[in-house]
Amino acid sequence: MNTSLALAEKFELIVGASHVCAATASDAIAGIQPEYIVSPGNEQELAAILASANEAGVAVIPRGGGTKLDWGNPPKRTGIILSTLRLNRVLEHAWADLTAIVEAGCSVQTLQDTLAKHGQRLALDALWPAHATIGGVLSSNDSGVLRLRFGALRDLVIGVTLALPDGTVASSGGKVVKNVAGYDLPKLATGALGTLGVITRAIFRLHSLPWTSKTVTCSTDRISKAQQLMTGLLASNLSYSAAQSRLIAERKPQILVDILFEGTEAGIASQIAHVNSLAAPMSVAESDHSVWQFRQRLHSEAKQNPTNSILVKISALPVDALAAMEDLPGLLPKTGFDAAIQATGLGVLLLRGDADTITSALKAFRKKFEAAGGSLVILGNSLSTKGINPWGTPGDAFELMRSLKQQFDPGNTLNPGRFVGGI
Image (tube, rainbow, N blue to C red; front, top):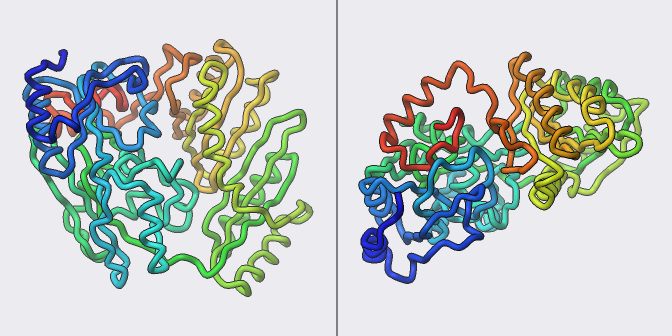
């Protein structure tokens, strides 16, 4: 349904004429063009805009920094983009309690800079932190490699406020870490891709910044050796904050295992000595912390080259994820791939090649992962994968997810069709 001029004028009365503008071609989502961008300045305005659009049957696409708008299915329809960028404040930093309350449109970097003044951080290494917003990373569940030690976003968020399609503003959770009342709402909103409600603010548990940190990298040309090291790390008593395997499939495949240690100089030195014994005869050398940007570099390359590359996210048991990479050279014999596989069994793969080669590799690889109880999700709207479901098989939880969508958003107003199974 087209957004009527009368409805646009109603939006202007709520947020002011200067905060309602016509969408341009650059605002299109997977080639589907919205009509207006509306930017509320507080929760009440956001809820009122949402209620008005819902009543008129106009689709709403929530948008923060726009860094992950190409994830998921293309929307079945668009009406307006609801921007959260004006809701950008850190409302409270209770440093003594290790908690913070932040609005959804605040960038991750702004939050981290504020917390760092008291020697604290949100233990999150999100993609594009200068642009990605708190609401966006929660909606996409972009946790990163630090989840190995500190947990995923669902473990770090202890409260959330949502604006529901009917204009209701609902909150759940509390400001102290021990308060678990209403924990379901934060967990439901995290990773829901904005299909249940629009996040307006969140409460996080925080962690202290480390005294110092070091990254060491072990290199090999055999995936089996890297898997052996990863298995040894998981079984050890080492206290590391992150671990990943980088597979760089150039002329000669190279596998690099990065391990991040945080703490005191003496403690880190002792643990690195242990790594040397675990990794032998692999070489071990100290690396720059830029190795942890490898995942982001793969995402950026996929965005820049959508016609001959595709990025996918895999999920598998830690012992299976890296071993599964043995099959990729046979599936992509000429074009190759790069991959970043976390010790938790999550990873991203950048596949290069023509559409037919990529499509064939994706189908074979997805079948392998799903048969083992894992998943393969396409990240980004690539021309190379038209006709392939980005999400894969919904699984046993699909009916429950559909019921939740019906309960929270019966009019299918929010991000219609973008989530698993076309929810």
